[in-house]
Image (cartoon, rainbow, N blue to C red):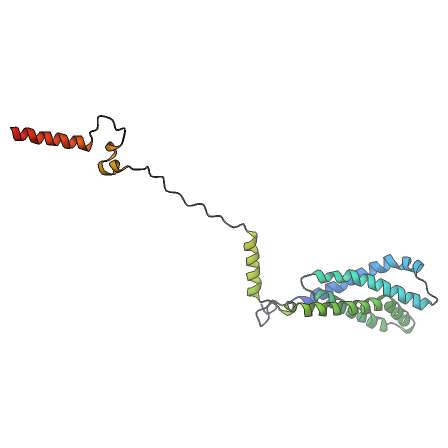
Length: 220
């Protein structure tokens, strides 16, 4: 786990791999820009000196390629864009080192060719990307904060919970409606309710019958 987690329980950032990938991407972008813009600029911009014309063309192409490469600032990790231009400078230095190993006649030609196509993108790209990154870093100090594994897991759990629809609790069952009870029903039962059939005697009738039975027994 030490290959992936540092001593502060934070995930190691693969920024080196991202910088190498960005540098290779920048090489492709600038190569495409040279292929597309060299001929139009040759017909549109001409100076008295051939060297000055070549330098102006290289700067214009470097500006166009840098504008495309700076789209990497829209990535969550803002360091990829400037680190890619730093990697491009390393690649340029590697090409120069390889050219120095050639023999004298080919060495000078190769160095001039590398400088003509590679020096302007490296200088313009780094001069544009690093101030933008430093300005974004000052404006947003959170770019310097690296989250721990627990914080990343907590944020992932919160995002998953937000995606799931909230469970709706079923409504509580309502108790059945109780029928209204009149005072007569509460005292003497349902037989005392209005509209009771004649087969049922009221409480007054029962009392009268009981009183008559007592009178008959006293006469006897």
